[in-house]
Length: 194
Image (cartoon, rainbow, N blue to C red; front, side, top):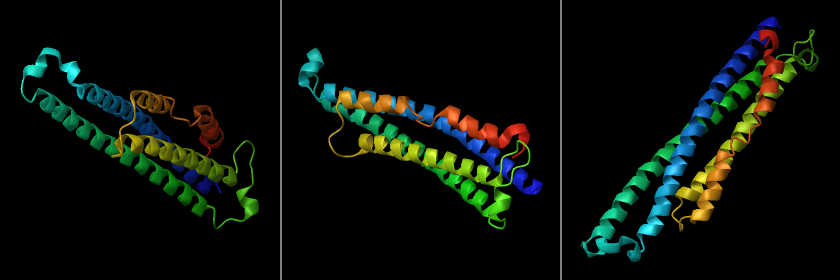
């Protein structure tokens, strides 16, 4: 059983690494979303001829500026898609860690899986912790994906107010309560047991 517990400890260390990557991606996502929102808001302003003032007299200035902004937006949207792909990779990794953790316990009886020795968590606790962390990140990813999809869809772009609300929703992320995740780690990794 001690060997099995050590294997779960390794799995939780991998999860910690993935969560650190998640936090880095969250910062990158906010930056990219903010940049895309700014360009989209600028595009709405730049489409109005009255906003060019004396520059109206220069032939093709509106089209040139709009074209440059559209190119910038395409680059940012491509980067956003890459970031979302990285988030998906973390979710897939967390799912694999959970499945592997569940598989480790398959050979044990239910009684052994629920056995506690002192303050050590049971194998069932380890598996449940892996499941909770995976499910939280999967839900979070799906929420982020739906927000980014609204931004990248070809339907009319969101209004400035909608962009602000979507950005605020992402800023409020992660909706993963860090205290809850820490308590899972504290239980599982107490005294470097599991």
